[in-house]
Amino acid sequence: MLALSYTEAVRLNYYALVISILGECLPEMAFEKLQSDKPGNVKNQLTSEDWDDMAKLREQGVYYKDLEAIYGLNMGHICRNLKSLKAKKEIGG
Image (cartoon, rainbow, N blue to C red; front, top):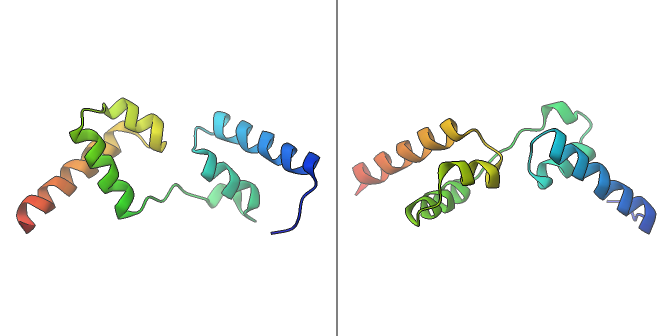
């Protein structure tokens, strides 16, 4: 990555903030969109570790609505994937 001056770095942070708020995405995704040649094609990709963390948070009593805000995903999508993950773990042992 190119070295940025202080004002350019601050400007980049503000742009990422605006994209994050208006685009309803995580700040990390906003920075990826800023740095991408095709910002519309950048998708929120979670790792299996992220899903495991979500499952642990859910077991601790965190609501789906809160997970939706943390990870920037639809609540229904989170619910379906966590149920699927739980079923796979029960079958696997």
